[in-house]
Image 1 (spheres, rainbow, N blue to C red):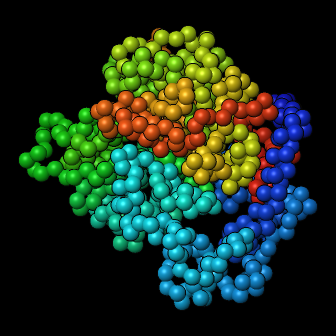
Image 2 (image 1 turned 90 degrees about the vertical axis):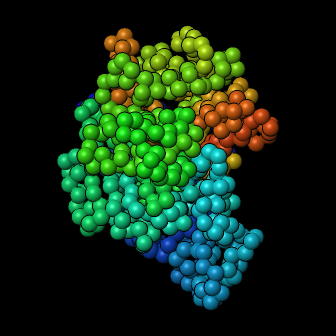
Image 3 (image 1 turned 60 degrees about the horizontal axis):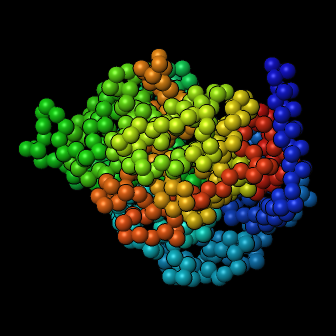
Length: 612
């Protein structure tokens, strides 16, 4: 073990030495980043309680909320003050400067009572504009622009694909196609009867606070994959909420997880499905980039419209059938009721395909129902015309990387890529050994993406990629592109989103788009076995696939460029910038189990995994 550890540390040192050899452009960026770190350290918009905690922290600072995905005992080391470049201004000093205390909600306050603005200020420490008056149209915030979240959904129509709101970015990027969990669960969405939450991580007390007061006593089913101590802790947390019922997903495959992220919401006038990428913990809805798809409201069927021997009122994508089958695979009594609820509602307005993964070894027809083989089946039957997309690029964007094997032709550029490049009419033909960086483009954060993010190195605790896999599959890094989302204001909001697409050579059109919980791993997408006769999947995953012609029968591709506009193309709001920006020679992918001590992050911290 000691020898292996030393080998990892040697590799880490090699990475760090390469930083010292960066070109002048990289050095200049470093200086700018240091200045930004100093500015943020002095004027970072946080509450008074957080300032007090910072003052009491020792030299080595452990995160307050260690996420489940983080490496064991990860810690953050405070960089000496002289390295930070400036001194933090205390809230007391700031109060003296302005003459009144700061509102607890700061610039996010939606109060309009003038007396409130006379008693409290709403400026961050680095904000100079006077905020002693209620918000005006000039500084429009989300709640001023929309009376209800229903209006937000109207703006998002027809795709209903949005990103989560991010604390710390300009208001304009949170005012359009953006949502938080309280918006989804708001009273304006309907009179909630009961709900179900499927996820990987759960903070039940926090989750209950996201429901409006009127709905906190309504029945809530939480579907999880915890066992042993994790299961005990979850039951202890749920004990204080008598309306909460827990359902444990069976995980018979080694290393499998319940990674699906979905909400089922039943109202007095219908049912809604929400598929997203965020864990049910506060930090996932704060300063990360997450994706959310919100279904139309599916109305309840009349008694005469129900069928006793089959599924009625389904969409052309068979979304209802596939969702019922997905729930059936849990083999849980708790979910039998939810299957019945779904069968009682009209899903004809669903215009996306459900793409899910279920643990197990799937053969015969079942092999094409799950994982990347479901993508292959859908694209082969309903996807783009082969001639149109012959030279297009498969795009993968994810927040975690698993073991893909030492040979790129076996999985990544073999069966997985074949599924992503599938098209209608003709089976995809290509030589997996000759896959170029034009055929496959992958988006994954660089070390600097993480270091300069809003969260700093802490963001890396939710981006698992270990040094062992990184060293074994170096070919993987040749396909990598930086995380960049300036068009959505989220270049510094670390991605926990997972999305996939097929882009034209000029990066102006997309043949399809998918948002899902599935990261880049065999466990999530499945791996063919026994000469392709069965698909082995370890984890539960769920996502939705968008195809242009399902939203407009005359549309063959989405427009995805801000410059591109065509009456024959619907514009799809991509979560990342195009064209993609490849890694430079000095860029390295974020690896979470090696130290980063040479350069401080945006909060002046270093990253030391395992307390080494």
